[in-house]
Image 1 (tube, one colour):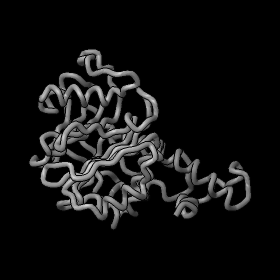
Image 2 (cartoon, one colour; image 1 turned 135 degrees about the vertical axis):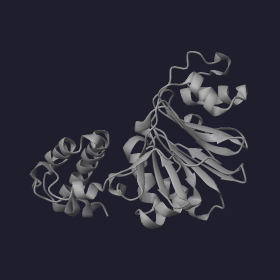
Image 3 (cartoon, one colour; image 1 turned 90 degrees about the vertical axis):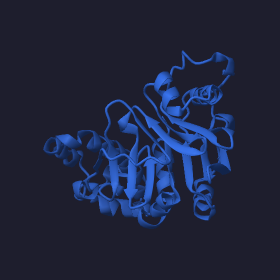
Length: 291
C-alpha cells in the first residue's frame, strides 16, 4: 500500500495555508504508508511541465515546488514497496509521454496483462501503466477490465484522473474551487471540508467532470478525542455512531501509530520511560511535543 494525491493548485495551497502546511501533510502521508520513494508531476495546459521522482526526493523539495511552480494540477505519490525492490525505477509515477502518467495505491496480480512488457524487478504498477499506455484505451475502460482492488491517479491525454473500486483508500478535500483527492488525510483535518466517497462498484473522475456528489463529510475528530487518549473513548464512539465505524477505525489506526511516536518523543523530552507516561495526559498536551 502507498499514498497518493491529485488536485489543483488551490487545493494544495489550502493545505499549506489552512491545514498546517504542505510539509506536515506530505510528511504524514510518507509516515503513514510510504517512505520508499516519492514522486511529483506538475501539469499545465494538459502537458507535464515538471516531473521528479527518486528514493531520496525530499518532502521539503516537493513542498517548495508545489508553492513556486506554475501549474494547473499536481500529482503526488509516496511508495511503500511491495512488488519490486526499492530503487528509482520503481518509484511512481510512470510517465511515458508528456500527457500520460500513472500511479497506484494497492496491488494487482496482473495475470491477464501482456507479459512482453514485463522486466525483472518490475512493479505491478509499472506493468499496468505500460500496458494501458500501449493499448491506447481510456483509463476507465482499461482499469475496469484489468484491475479490481486498487486506486489509481494519473494523466491521460493531458487530463488528470482518479479511478478506484475501493472506497476506503480515497477521500476528498472540497472547498469552493479548491480540491484534492487523497488516499487519506490526517484525522486532525476531519470535520473541515474533508469527505469520504460513496459509490456502488467504482469511481472515475477526470478533468472536466463535476466532482463526486455522493459524499459524506467527516466529523470533527478533535471532539471525539479531546480527553485522555484511551482507546475506550474511540471504541465507545463506534458504538454510538455505527454509521462511522469505518471512519473511526481509520482514526484508531492513525491514532495508535501517532500516539506511539508522540509518546516516544515525550518520554525522551521528559527523561522518563515510555511506559511511565500517565494515561491521564491529554492528546492536546501530548501532541504539543510534535509541533
